[in-house]
Image 1 (cartoon, rainbow, N blue to C red):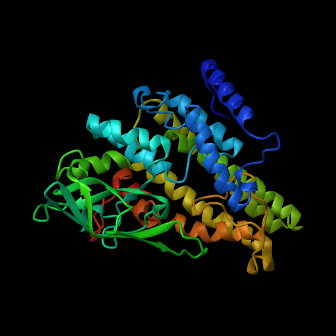
Image 2: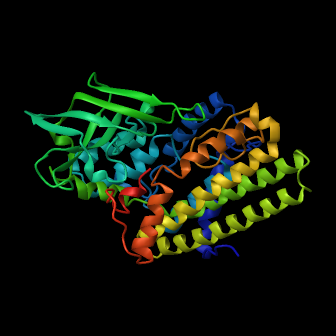
Image 3: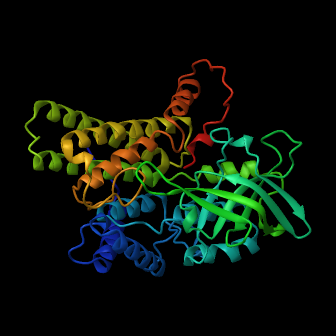
Length: 416
């Protein structure tokens, strides 16, 4: 059973497919088939093509450079890009377009919109997210990074951690404490801060896979103009929650496609390694198949709510908990199929540290072992499995709350 779209939506799908057919090579297999250097160059060139053809920020109003696509059209674009194995933007665009761009559209002044939005689209400004701190993870309201007003500038001191793509960014949107005498969810201000200044140091965090997608960011008397406040001074909590609310219904449609593609590749790996007739391996593959199908139906439910204008609630923890725990299991199966080859990984490593390897990736031992290692982090980032279970138990099933120091809300746990 597949999602059925109305005829006008399918007509739009054909338009997207025609665009892809026009701009991709005839022998295109997916970005995962490219070397690291080729993939970096392709992503840069592809982003420029998307920008020139109006496929960046497709949900933004047209007056701000977007296409004002309907939610269904946004989903179709995401589906077709995923099937084709192409990115929907550059590595920092999820923070620039989806997060801070949408937040500026909702909360920013007209001057801020005119200044920042064109620079986000052009790629001149590349953004990262300054939310988490060593002592403010799921309990984001416990943040301690401070900002004080000094004349016409805010002076920022403190630390942020788990800053994805921070080493590639030249701007950061950062939550700061500007009134430390107020309750923890009060006195927080949402600031836009340039990173190319002496007062900011970015330190990559090496992961178990050897990659460094995450970073620590240290602020030592870093400065940003006082007009770079989004929303009200000391009213940044509401802005922060707005940003976290910019979930995409596209993700509900895209994730099952990626996990199905990965499982098909794993089945091929079992055949290549002579394990396809092993009854225990076949049983585990069948289990994975059933889980991917359930994930697809979960995606359909979320997608239906999204297209009906619904907003994500605590029940969204079902999807996050489900895919992250599944991905640990399926990648363990991949390592078992590889056997001793998994101890000496060779070939192309994963192109991303998040979820599956990129479409078109080869069945190299390095791809699968790297994905296996990355899958460990999937049950931690964007809210640990333990937090997701607490959310579901307390806010969806209505079970009594456990006494615990961490009182972070479900919204706080959803950030990446």
